[in-house]
Amino acid sequence: MATDQRNQQPTPPKPGTRPSVRVDDQLAADLADIMRTGVNMSDAIRRAAGHLADVYRVGWANGVCPEGTAPQVLAYQLHQQPTPEPTTSGYDEPSATSDTRPPHLLDRRLASPPPGRHLPTAYAETLLGRRTPPQRPDAQRPARA
Image 1 (tube, rainbow, N blue to C red):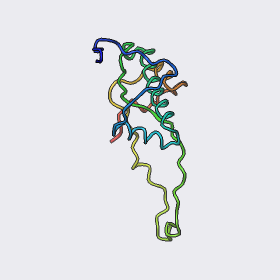
Image 2 (spheres, rainbow, N blue to C red; image 1 turned 90 degrees about the vertical axis):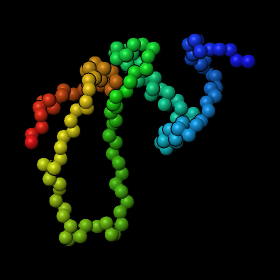
Image 3 (cartoon, one colour; image 1 turned 180 degrees about the vertical axis):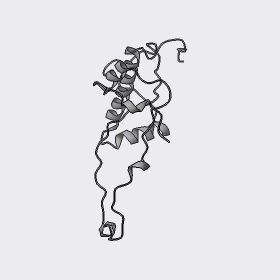
Image 4 (tube, one colour; image 1 turned 60 degrees about the vertical axis):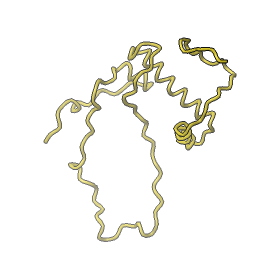
């Protein structure tokens, strides 16, 4: 018979132990997405746990939330990687009648900052591992009509 452990704090596993986790549909889908990068299931679990632990440590170190509680992730920033050119065929060649001019710049709008509180500079530097550039001077001005 199992003992009642509802009031006991879970303890971290010792190095070398083999955890047993039931893989449900959601976990299988999440692991499949991570494994699309070419890693095996063990490495996918290690990467996911390491990434989440880094988020927790940065949140606690910068006072975003009390230590021992889970910080709430509001946004994240990804490094832009170049994507390969799509495969083309002879049918994809531009014709003499196609418009090859670049798009007009007035049709593009700058993205507005996300709603809510923004990260303090020290927190952003710790999270990104580098100094953040100064904010654009036009970022605080309202957009022109």
